[in-house]
Length: 76
Image 1 (cartoon, rainbow, N blue to C red):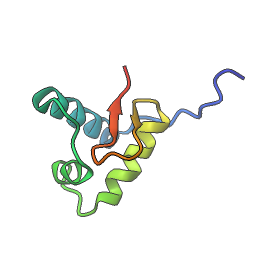
Image 2 (image 1 turned 60 degrees about the vertical axis):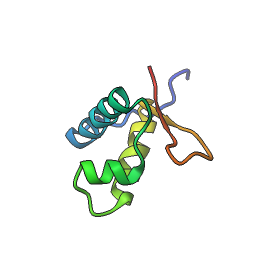
Image 3 (image 1 turned 180 degrees about the vertical axis):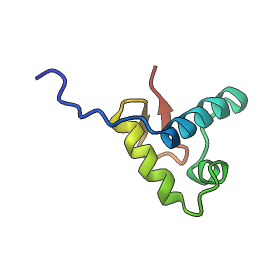
Image 4 (image 1 turned 30 degrees about the vertical axis):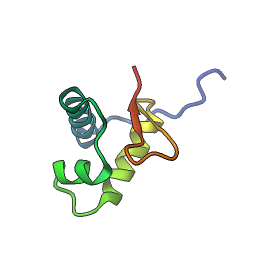
């Protein structure tokens, strides 16, 4: 099958993170760190951001770049 990707449903929290990333990039011209995303969403741990980033990556909303501190990039 051409579309073997399992589509993860977009949750309100995923949408909140995605919107934060978009606004951050528009304002700063670079991507936020995981700590900045955790702070913005009032998470106590960066691990919570990692879980959401993984889901956004599965949805093809973002992609991660290996070897970079600010290692995410918006798709489209």
